[in-house]
Image (cartoon, rainbow, N blue to C red; front, top):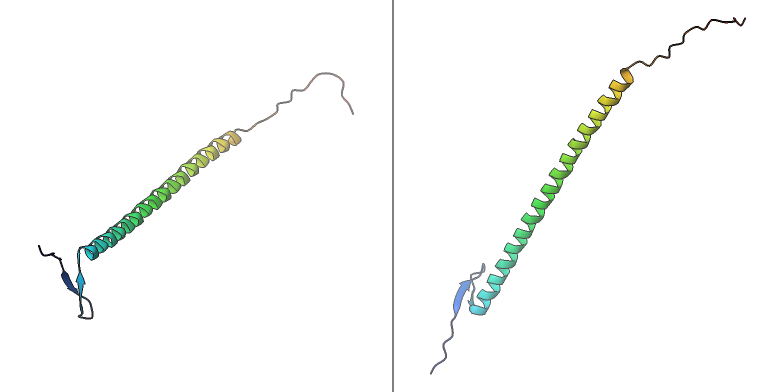
Length: 95
Protein backbone atom coordinates (compact mmCIF):
# COMPACT_ATOMS: atom_id res chain seq x y z
CA UNK A 1 0.00 0.00 0.00
CA UNK A 2 1.32 3.43 -0.83
CA UNK A 3 0.99 6.41 1.45
CA UNK A 4 -1.12 9.25 0.16
CA UNK A 5 -0.23 12.83 0.99
CA UNK A 6 -2.51 15.78 0.30
CA UNK A 7 -0.59 18.80 -0.88
CA UNK A 8 -2.06 22.12 -1.82
CA UNK A 9 -0.23 25.07 -3.24
CA UNK A 10 -0.91 28.73 -2.86
CA UNK A 11 1.07 31.66 -4.15
CA UNK A 12 2.35 34.41 -1.91
CA UNK A 13 2.39 38.07 -2.76
CA UNK A 14 5.93 37.51 -4.07
CA UNK A 15 4.71 34.99 -6.62
CA UNK A 16 6.37 32.10 -4.79
CA UNK A 17 4.38 28.95 -4.28
CA UNK A 18 4.33 27.28 -0.93
CA UNK A 19 2.91 24.00 0.17
CA UNK A 20 -0.16 24.07 2.30
CA UNK A 21 -1.52 20.93 3.77
CA UNK A 22 -4.37 20.22 6.11
CA UNK A 23 -2.26 21.39 9.06
CA UNK A 24 -1.65 24.81 7.50
CA UNK A 25 -5.29 25.09 6.58
CA UNK A 26 -6.20 24.29 10.17
CA UNK A 27 -3.89 27.08 11.34
CA UNK A 28 -5.51 29.47 8.86
CA UNK A 29 -8.95 28.46 10.09
CA UNK A 30 -7.86 29.01 13.68
CA UNK A 31 -6.48 32.44 12.81
CA UNK A 32 -9.70 33.35 11.02
CA UNK A 33 -11.68 32.21 14.05
CA UNK A 34 -9.50 34.37 16.29
CA UNK A 35 -10.04 37.35 14.00
CA UNK A 36 -13.79 36.76 14.00
CA UNK A 37 -13.87 36.45 17.78
CA UNK A 38 -11.77 39.63 18.07
CA UNK A 39 -14.22 41.48 15.81
CA UNK A 40 -17.14 40.05 17.76
CA UNK A 41 -15.50 41.16 21.00
CA UNK A 42 -15.04 44.63 19.58
CA UNK A 43 -18.70 44.79 18.61
CA UNK A 44 -19.82 43.55 22.02
CA UNK A 45 -17.65 46.08 23.85
CA UNK A 46 -18.85 48.87 21.57
CA UNK A 47 -22.48 47.90 22.15
CA UNK A 48 -21.93 47.75 25.91
CA UNK A 49 -20.31 51.19 25.92
CA UNK A 50 -23.18 52.56 23.86
CA UNK A 51 -25.73 51.15 26.31
CA UNK A 52 -23.81 52.60 29.27
CA UNK A 53 -23.61 55.97 27.51
CA UNK A 54 -27.38 55.97 26.85
CA UNK A 55 -28.13 55.00 30.47
CA UNK A 56 -25.91 57.80 31.81
CA UNK A 57 -27.56 60.34 29.50
CA UNK A 58 -31.00 59.05 30.54
CA UNK A 59 -30.19 59.40 34.24
CA UNK A 60 -28.95 62.93 33.54
CA UNK A 61 -32.27 63.88 31.95
CA UNK A 62 -34.25 62.26 34.77
CA UNK A 63 -32.27 64.02 37.52
CA UNK A 64 -32.57 67.35 35.68
CA UNK A 65 -36.36 66.99 35.46
CA UNK A 66 -36.56 66.09 39.15
CA UNK A 67 -34.43 69.12 40.07
CA UNK A 68 -36.65 71.32 37.92
CA UNK A 69 -39.80 69.99 39.62
CA UNK A 70 -38.25 70.56 43.07
CA UNK A 71 -37.31 74.11 42.07
CA UNK A 72 -40.87 74.84 40.89
CA UNK A 73 -42.26 73.49 44.15
CA UNK A 74 -39.90 75.52 46.34
CA UNK A 75 -40.50 78.64 44.22
CA UNK A 76 -44.26 78.22 44.57
CA UNK A 77 -43.90 77.77 48.33
CA UNK A 78 -41.68 80.87 48.61
CA UNK A 79 -44.14 82.96 46.56
CA UNK A 80 -46.79 82.72 49.28
CA UNK A 81 -46.29 85.80 51.45
CA UNK A 82 -46.07 85.18 55.14
CA UNK A 83 -47.28 88.04 57.26
CA UNK A 84 -47.44 88.26 61.01
CA UNK A 85 -50.55 90.13 61.98
CA UNK A 86 -50.29 92.18 65.17
CA UNK A 87 -53.48 93.38 66.82
CA UNK A 88 -53.36 96.37 69.16
CA UNK A 89 -54.11 95.75 72.82
CA UNK A 90 -55.92 98.18 75.00
CA UNK A 91 -54.02 99.25 78.02
CA UNK A 92 -51.30 101.60 79.12
CA UNK A 93 -49.28 103.35 76.59
CA UNK A 94 -45.53 103.40 77.08
CA UNK A 95 -43.97 106.69 76.13
